[in-house]
Amino acid sequence: MSKKNTSLHELLQPLRERYFISGEINTKLSSMTEVPKKLAAIEARYKDAQISRMDGISVDYQDWHFNVRGSNTEPLLRLNLEAATTEMMEQKRDEVLSIIRG
Image 1 (spheres, rainbow, N blue to C red):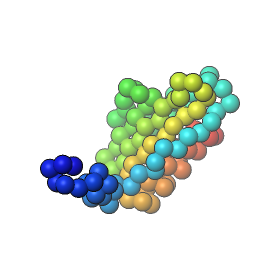
Image 2 (tube, one colour):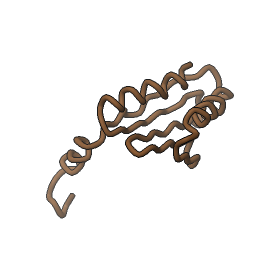
Image 3 (cartoon, rainbow, N blue to C red):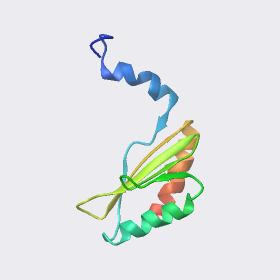
Image 4 (cartoon, rainbow, N blue to C red):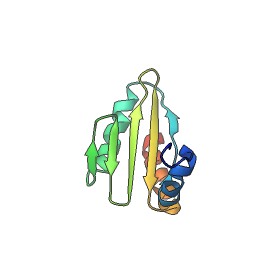
């Protein structure tokens, strides 16, 4: 920021124009025992993707990816998703949320 004499907002603007981000979407579950079940269902559904389990579950495809992680203190799943287009982001967001909320 100091080298370019600009704000963080201005530095990130080109990325915001290239990647479409859902923002963090929280879904409250009925109990903490539901969290690992939902994560397992997500992993089973997206088994053809590159999967990482570092912090919850991260699923990577060439033109979209997401992370779902549980809260440490309450029965809550947090989804963050990015895609190449707004339309894809919305469609994939709704797809993943249907698993979480189903």
